[in-house]
Length: 277
Image (cartoon, rainbow, N blue to C red):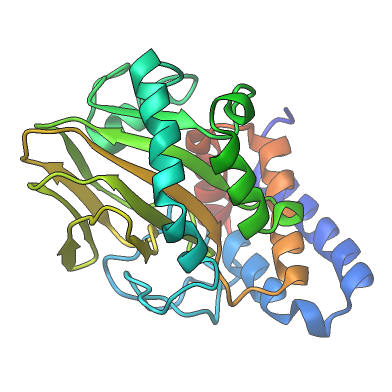
């Protein structure tokens, strides 16, 4: 990892943008140019809903709203597969396979503060569908996700079975960027569990999915008596073009190389860059 300085990071981002401009053409990257200006602090972030405050990136000129209720093209297929996904989930639960605390690893202190959960808390655990054993343990679910999403663009960006136990609370927080959307498919959906995104709270329904922008402030509380489990899938905002997605990914790789793979370190590097502009 390179020592992080604002000048070095900005120069590397601008150099990579120049390469991408040659690769894709200036017209295709008009919004990416504006994105880099916002990321480096050359331009201030635009006025937006006070509850939308992504921790790393803001992408310009795309629809920003807490809940995205227009059906996604893959949604009927995903919902139709609920029985198969639930069957594989039940197999994992019966054998107690693969679920780990979300607040764990190198970023655990940052996550503990962000979500107001203690390190290694069992109140929120996840099964990562990208882990090595997932294809053997959840073959139908992993195959379906590869079919429905654009694997060549790194979709789903995140794919997990997310478990929240009764009495748990995930504190209000914002995600990393507005160029991702998050889908939840209800699998085990007891009463008393709610998700607030922006100013509206909703509950889950088994076999139904909902899509939201986690760059808006959101929180979860579980006042019921049974465990809640959803399939969580994060994907690129549908208004980004393929060229934009590949460019944003390439630029983020520069940030990772410069600041490291932990979100907390990336946030510090980008805040320092924007603060030094």
